Image (cartoon, rainbow, N blue to C red; front, side):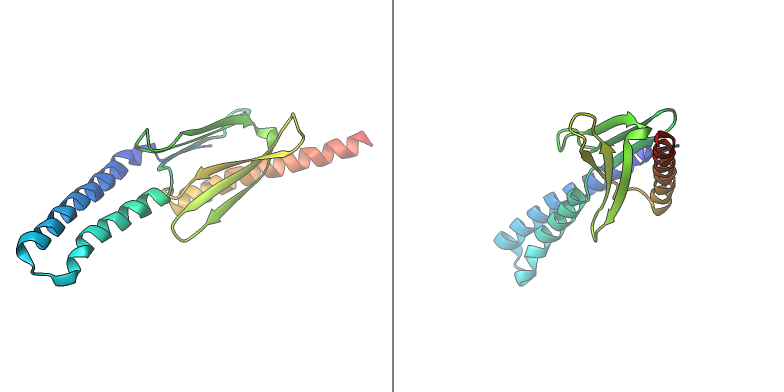
Length: 166
């Protein structure tokens, strides 16, 4: 199964540009209000505060672009920002049999996907984290279905391996 919201990148760029324009206009109106107009009283702070809160919420939600591919023998995850220098891209590829479990954490402002995979070297599990806040409910549901199939297959193969080994 393939899942990607890469086609929504122009939409996220527009939102970020709009927030930046609001910040610049808010600072301009704040300075104008403090020096010349004096119409709003203490409310001029909201011209700066509200756009900054919107920017912080946009950035807290995490990386905007999420791509998932489970076709073939490997699982591919790619998670990146629309602004390349803002954070490092998360890109992982591993065989399907290494997937142990997954968890979707749904907080108020963001959603995260935690993937637990087997490690060959130290026999411990590695946890990989991806931001899925910008996926739709249907996309998250499809992602869960695909991951559930893989986890279920891995558990059955593990059970069959134990019974044959005895």
